[in-house]
Amino acid sequence: MSIPIEVPGLDTILPELAEGRVVLVESGADAAKSFFVRRLSLTAGRVGWPVTFVTSRDRDELQVQLASERGTAPLPDGWVRIQERDAVSDLEEFGKDGGLLAVDSFSFLTLDLSPDQLAQALRALRTQCRRKGTTAVLATDRGMFEPRAEAVAVHLSDGLLQFHTREGPEGAVRFLRVPKWMDGRFVDRNIYYEFDGKRIAIDLRSRVL
Image (cartoon, rainbow, N blue to C red; front, side, top):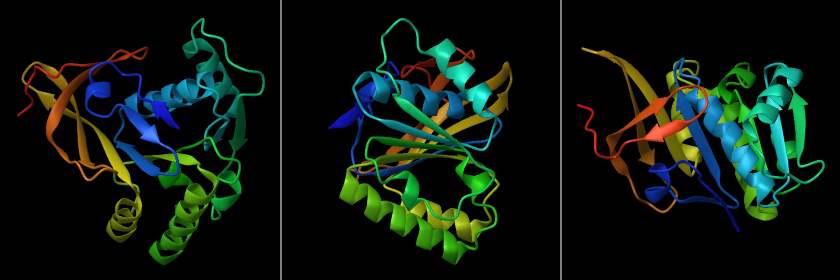
C-alpha cells in the first residue's frame, strides 16, 4: 500500500509514499512544509490509513487546521491520534501501529539528543517502520540540527524533500528540491511552486535559477 501525494505537478515526479519508509520534509520559515505534512495526513486518513500525528505545537490548533483543510471528503471516525510533545527520544512507540506517522517539528523535538542518540532513535524507527509497514514523515526546520545531526538524519532517511524560499527581483521565489528519494532517483533541479496558505501549486514549466 502507499499514500498518494495529492499535489498536482509534484505527483508526476513523486506519485506516492510507500509503506515502511522514513521521509524528511525540510524548510526554513515557510509554512508550506507543515501544510504538506497535514495534507499527507488527510490523504492517508481518506485512503483508510490510521494516522499518528506528533506535534510540538498546540493540539487544539492542529485540530482546527485539519478540520479547515479536510474539505468535504469523509474521514473515518478516529482516523487521527494527536500526540502533543515537548521532546521525544524514543520514536518506536509512535510507529508501532502501522499507517502514517507524522512528526512536526522533528528537529525541535529531538534537540536534546546527541547525533549518536539521534542515529540510534532513527535506526530503531526504521526497523519499526519496516516491520509494521508504517510510513514516517518527519518535518524538520532548516538550521535547527547541528551539521553532524543533520547528516545523520539525511543518511538514515529514505527520502528528503526540501522547501526553499529566497528573494528574487520581484519578491519571494519558492522552489522544491528532492536531493534523495527511496527508489534511487534524484530530482536534481529547482521546482517552482506557489503557496497561499490553502494550496501548493507546482509549476514545472518555470525555471528557478
